[in-house]
Amino acid sequence: MAMFVDQAPFTAKAGNGGNGCVSFHREKFVLNGGPDGGDGGHGGSIVLLADGNMHTLLDFRMKAKYFAANGEDGRGGRCSGKNGEDLVIKVPVGTIVKGENGQIVADMFEEGQRRVLLHGGRGGWGNAHFATPTRQAPNFARPGVVTQPFKFTLELKTIADVGLVGFPNVGKSTILSVVTRAQPKIANYHFTTLTPNLGIVRHHGQDFVMADIPGLVEGAADGAGLGHDFLRHVDRTRLLVHVIDMAGSEGRNPLADFEAINAELSRYGDLKNRPQIVAANKMDLPDGADYLEMFKEKYPDVPVYPVSAATRQGFDDLLNAVAERLRALPPVAPYEQEEFLDDLPDLSGYTVRREGRIYLVEGAAMERLINSVNFEDTDSLKWFHLTLRRTGVIDALRKAGAGEGDTVQIEDMQFDFID
Image: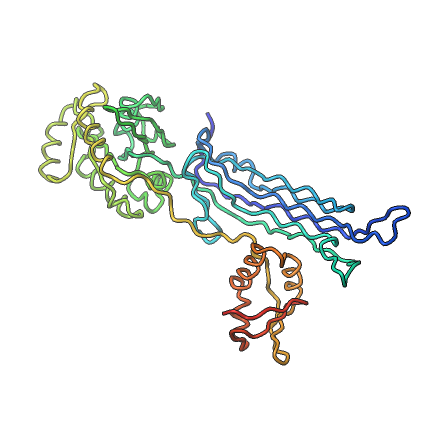
């Protein structure tokens, strides 16, 4: 049986763009053939794919670095370099991807969903691109964009409509096996369930996914027991079915158990506000009826349904209530995702100074930036302006005194300052 892993760090890097080629046409009896250097190919991107056949992040414990292929350099004869092949990384459905600062940059929410995590570097222009009537033999080309590696963390959060929660050994796995065709491992000891088990409930024409979540203990919100490994998988559920050993068969007080579980849920995100139905299990055992009356008296507003997983009784009423509540609840929604700007270059080390009426931005990083931009392409220009804004160059110009319409020069390019 494969190990269940629901959290894993990994490093990814998109492919570098290939360099443009400096070449001149050479042919017998043809004088001054002119520049014919081809463009470099684009680097491969890192692409995520949500795969419904994967249920663990174990692969990322075995391999933690993923590098896409580089684009090939351009060649003479106006031959462009081959684009690097995209690297497709499969992840389980429900996986979220976090950046180094903990921001969610991708939520692989649906089976078959694809997401470009890192874009491949653009290929550089060959010297054939720079030929003009006044510059007929350009002896230069642009290098491809060199990409940077980034570190991410994957977290698997189970996607289910209903989550079965409760202390270990209260019968969650048995209930799942009764109401679905799932066959979880079941035994009479604590923490039999160490991984979420999912099954599909088909009840009176309505289907919904139910998950048996690993057992919770007091202090889980602080990491005790399975801790966040449990709570992570409850995050997405629309409805909680709180399973209680209402007979107190292990010497525990079911009312105290109910309070303890809810205390842990209330300390983790917004789970305290999640709709909840109580399944009073083990009602076939002595003391079940007495504890049930005590429970109803203490919690008159909590919907509770007596069931017995051992004798398979009481589940029709429970599932009717679950189905009715789900029809009134909104569907599961993906997490809000932040834009991840993987293609912003490192522009540290530049300076801004004023020379006459022109503001000069200088530094080796600026030369690399200018070489990366296709000033005849609208998308490339948008990327250029976004880069200046996001990396602080616009703020530095403003601080130096640049105003609307002033001339800014970076390398041999001049443009108007737009605030």
